[in-house]
Length: 209
Image (cartoon, rainbow, N blue to C red; front, side, top):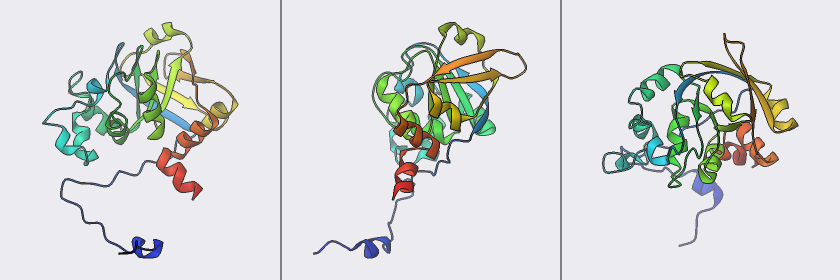
């Protein structure tokens, strides 16, 4: 049997079971973000800490709305509730954030809950790339001591991404109401900047076709 033409394939209906959902659409990165810091964690946070595995969770791996209920439940059982209420938000972490297995769900599910920025002292390489692929901006503290300036519940303001991401490796963030400012850095390539600004790799590829 010959493969379908492009037009024929587009006309087909894909049947899915009740626990299989399409990947949610994620919007582009706004030029200005005002983000509550909903979670502050320490060093060596693993992808298991972010997105637990096991028999309770894995049945939902094709259902992002359902699997997102488990994000960070082992460290903070109220994070999901706060994230659903807040929408767009940030997380702060220590060294080696996202270490461990390279599961994409540890980036997809928090993004579904509204995560837009992770600020850490350092990232595990594969999780760093997965965050970018799904439109979450990974930033590092230029001065590690600035981690201590942040507390859960702070509101961070970051703006002029169109200039800051393109112009270099530093972004300034302010902590609303305190007068404190943070200098944050990134190691993004021009392609990764474009992916983030589009809202993730799928959006970026769609725009190119």
